[in-house]
Length: 322
Image 1 (cartoon, one colour):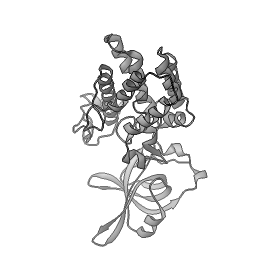
Image 2 (image 1 turned 120 degrees about the vertical axis):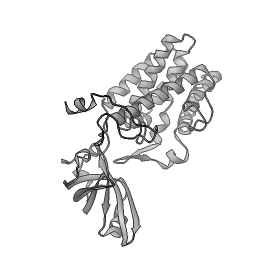
Image 3 (image 1 turned 90 degrees about the vertical axis):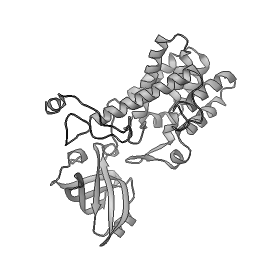
Image 4 (image 1 turned 30 degrees about the horizontal axis):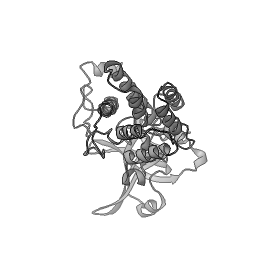
């Protein structure tokens, strides 16, 4: 049973436990070659380096493998780093895969049940039929239930996609209570479907990474493929509604630079874009706020994706110590 966790590894500690390899590269230095790694578990990730038998280890292991590591924790450029003395494979019967995938705050099965409830409450028979086709699909449903919403940024844990989807749907429904002009069933359908393509974008092989399809095609195009495939099974689905719901998904990232094939051109598409942006940004900022910053308890570590620190407040140190 795993007892050492990545987020507890501090300089000077001895390491003797199992971790997932997230990255593995042979690199050159003046004395030869070394192995540069990133290892982790559900609590986080940490860089590692190995100087011995590196060619053999590089040929033997790949990202996604669970390995037993012995070594010590030091620092490199003021960042904790594991120096690996030995690395051995761990049999699949000797570890729990959930120890290596980040866990979310809510049981994924409860979240998919909430999505079922939203679908059943949609009055429009066509949008409800489409959503039922998607979320009752025996291949789509389990993958959607456990998928992350992102690799590293927002909701990057088991069940993160369902949580993000529910949040976006809730924001859209709140907008409908303010703006009577919004077509609520259309907007809710778009919210539930907007990131469905992420079920094929990320692999869950002991750590999150992009699939080949995720990199080469992207989650928006994958989502449109899933939706059009289901629409083909619904012979009485009105053509106008097909265009509207597909447009919501295809435009939900807002700009061509952000990866949308088209920009939002309906009222509902603009609201969905803003709802998605809001929840993804809030999710990422909350993640940054929860990270340890050894230099300053009042500020988060620098967040590259939004190019800033996040202020935690004057009482952050007391709260963290309390």
